[in-house]
Length: 620
Image (cartoon, rainbow, N blue to C red; front, side, top):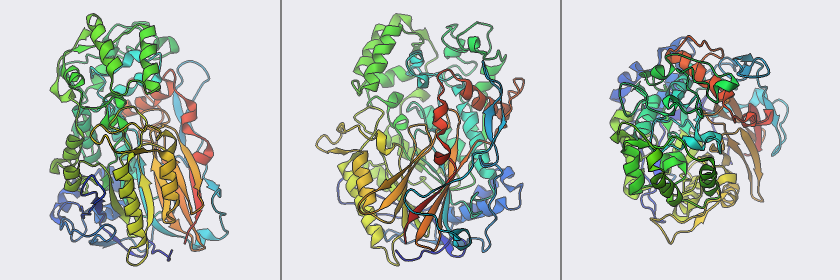
């Protein structure tokens, strides 16, 4: 592979996206660019002012905006896959910033004080950077030789959640901690604080080079709800969000039910969580449904779909009329006999109820136990087409690009996968690993697998030599075991994680597969007879430790490439104040409550070798 230019010295290009033109093997490509350059001034005016507090912060933003709004943006020049016409952009800074630690887990990480009961968080020790040579030895002197090729931020498993949604199964809390979390009513405030953190970064931590974009890797929403999708897009693009459905005047969910199974922050009820030391916070529920203001990201961002985006409950086949009617209706089940709950969750875990037949039977049989809630059409599930349309809505373009990776070709072909330019030197490929047949694990259909293969092959034939490739998906290689047929394509085979690893390993241009789903930090080396790459799985932003990850790619000019991974927390302070129910105070509580949630898993943070790393690869 020929030496690739550094973004520190070469001109950067506007990101483009190529998508499958049809759902079958014949796939064309189209350039999907950001809004017209005339929108630059309006977009820049919406940027979070905190991103400009440091003079160097403008470097990050200007590089990102150059990608979103470069000359020629909006031209829509079509070209064969792998040969898209790429509009030129402003030059990246000639002298990159110096590496830094502020605002990252290289400086400090939220950590608990005390040993028992409800534990308060404060500033804890940093996580060190670990050099991993599993796939290639790290050579001396590379620090002085390396040049930056690309840098991006990964968001994963935000789980923006409507906590009052009738289809939620909070009553399964005894079976799985993910059924209900004491902090989840603050998911919007928590996600906005993560946006604020990215806006305040002074470039990429390891190299100081500009950040080019943010990429989500699925489960952006929690329950396939239109309200959640609207909130997610406003968090990312900027806007005002009122995280409340049903009665506009007050909260109607399980935390006001009088059931001891749930934490009642506004009530003196001695519930199960208060027995663990959870506080009494008068006014919490009113604050939780109060308007939240997001500045929106100051960087272009790209979207990847996850099972909670595509499937009701994250596990049941979509577009079921019963679930649609129940979602917008006026009844909600809040309690369930433990034995019935155990049977339901066992069926879900074992994949025995992918269409939700058992769940529907249970809801019908428990009708007398249901509570009345205010109906709301905003809770209706969204279809894959509506998911695409929402991203393509000009009102949700934000910092760009228009569609956030998705194009009209995706809409016409009913696909949710595409490729895009992270930088001149690095191609991104976003996959749809959800299985419309149901269940929370994933797979790829044959048409998408063949499309991926063609994209990789086209990249290798690229004029001027191949780009490096980073693949994005929601599911990990270990959680792609769901081979149920897509009801819309009953004759199409499904393909699991082992096949994807084998395919990626056959292409030496592939550097990394970046994903989420497991809610755990884990970095896995993959070595195949033809090549090697790293799989980077990142913890969620719903469960502690609530993280996102910066990934930087550098050419060491010694036959190796390094991928730097740096974990970041939201901008919310580590210490909380129970009297502070402001937007910032709620974001801090979001983290601390998640740490103390019964059933929380400390192992989700991973080991040091899964956190802040330098991952070395033999490439070139």
